[in-house]
Image 1: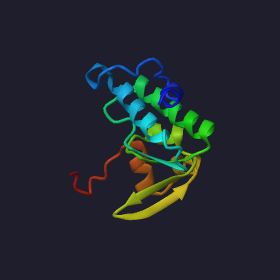
Image 2 (image 1 turned 120 degrees about the vertical axis):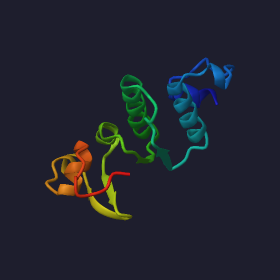
Image 3 (image 1 turned 45 degrees about the vertical axis):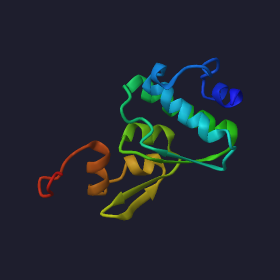
Length: 131
């Protein structure tokens, strides 16, 4: 447990109660709990949701560092395009329930595909309903 907490920059917090932890610290605790078991794959579901941009950046850096240090595969589901670009080595974009495009972050963010372009740049299509 101590080693996992050190890995996610939470050394010395073993005795804190959940209510005493910030949102970013809670995200780090979740990652520490996952890596205790030395997995080959770590899944992230919206890892930066609800965090301010500075804390979100630190979580992204942590994900990359843990991936490299522990030599694990990471899979993240996110709508945060800045985060996807920072942590992704390969990005798959789903559209209408199917993989629409797969590529490196540069390939995705430089895509001229209108669906991909609108999504990564946050541009709505007036012809499609917004729900």
